[in-house]
Image 1 (spheres, rainbow, N blue to C red):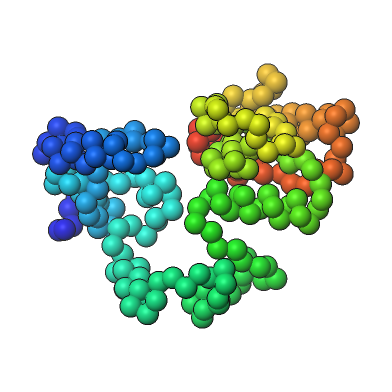
Image 2 (image 1 turned 60 degrees about the vertical axis):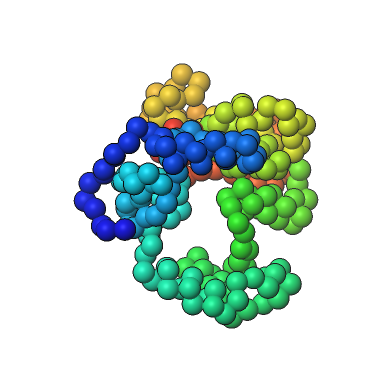
Length: 236
């Protein structure tokens, strides 16, 4: 794919090839995979991505903010090619390998040292692991989370998610012991507060819960998004 400096759209969206792939998708893939955009990718380079009909788009999603190196970064491509030529999977939960340990050591150093690294496949899997760590090591039954949060859609993380009720519909009862409190939203402050007081009123509300119905010494963790994503890209 040649590098472009602007989008190029040659067909209505979805184009004929994309429409055909989407029709096949609808027949065989789980309905849990949402398809909100009429887009079927074929190849990408840097910040540009081309669909199966030859339309080129500027990608502002970066794989929902996880592919910040862009498409087909030469160092990433070479690393994948090099490792795939050796081996791609030997069940790392059972066997160690030098690349796995090296990466864990680098992550530990970046985090300040003294940590243990858990590798997962997704954010929701990481949240599930965190919930298990909290429950196992603290033996405390309660977890605090915030309204508007998105922490995943597997059953444990879904109990923490509160960005849209449609995610929860049909899956109750969820993980017990999760208590939601308002997010300190400066644009829509909770409890009628002024924007500059949004954080304090949330802290006051948590203190109220601790005094009235939520024993603080039984709270094992607080799950908090430093910047809320699905809740509206909110800086608290």
